Image (tube, rainbow, N blue to C red; front, side, top):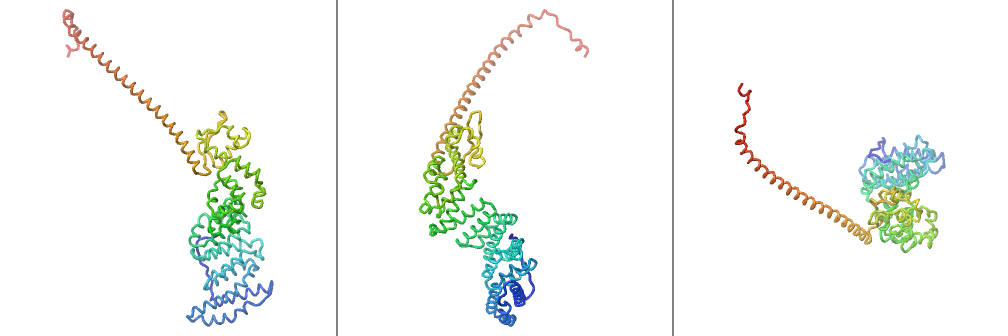
Length: 466
């Protein structure tokens, strides 16, 4: 897979290397299919180039080089029959020569086509050999070189065809860390951008990575210009993206799809499919059941959803429970309410609640004792006027609750203030009562000496000793 940019060093002049490669191509062609000699076709041009190697007429030199390379590259498909040990050196030599042309991109795109096809000399290791060559080409080009786009497409195609898990995982890591940077550097138009995302989506589908595939199908969808939204190709892509989103067990947000011009164009071309999108975006299970009873899935857009009835109903139940949880002001959902909304038995409620929690649509706590689900968090499927009204209602509930809490706090504060005043008044009264007793006791002490003058005084023997 693409790595830090490096260089490819091959010794020899352009004419010497072209002659060597042409002779090698002739050997391969004679061994397999025969045909005209490449060496003979370019002999006169190579002779002219040899004479010009010491001249400064660069324009004439590049023109002749391109003419020589056209004939060599045209015969280059035979390299896929080269022995394993010669495959990589031969392609490296061809790439080295192509990089000396006036417009390497013309020839590199042709080489990418060759390498995207089977390597007949090594059916088992052919994809690995092709990836090695493509990676070398990719890394020898400057990061901003638009030729990298064609090389990358070829790399993705080889990985998709090979079915290699390791190669796909390496590609996926590069997509996460490098793809946005590459897209910005290559400055692709809408058509090339769409082609790249679809190539990645196809590779992801082949690897069983439906989530990554869907995300790149959506990216391709958003690259469609509004003027092309109603075209046949755009419709097919919109149907693919919408079908993928509806049937994928982990996709519950359809906002990005609804924002696409191509998907909006389905309102006219595929009315039933678009109506189904609207149901999954905002409606509940009862609406879905009514729709399916009147419009069988097999009749929608050529039957793209004919085999998806169970998956769609399961997802619709999860979405219905999410809507139920997000629209309940009390945040407490009785089992009976859930069972009625999902069309299941009371004994199945806990299973569906757990599945909805695992899907990340709600958070909460089940109470078997009280037969209720206490909602902690719920995901809004859409957020419009209805949802603002629900938020407003919930805020009113919270406001009343806070007012009740404040009322309790205020009453406790007043009670505490009253008790404090009472305690302070009691303490003051106690102090005043103690002061009166002290005065009375003091009067008695003043009279006591007169009554005790006739009493004998005790002798302090220790004091005398001192």
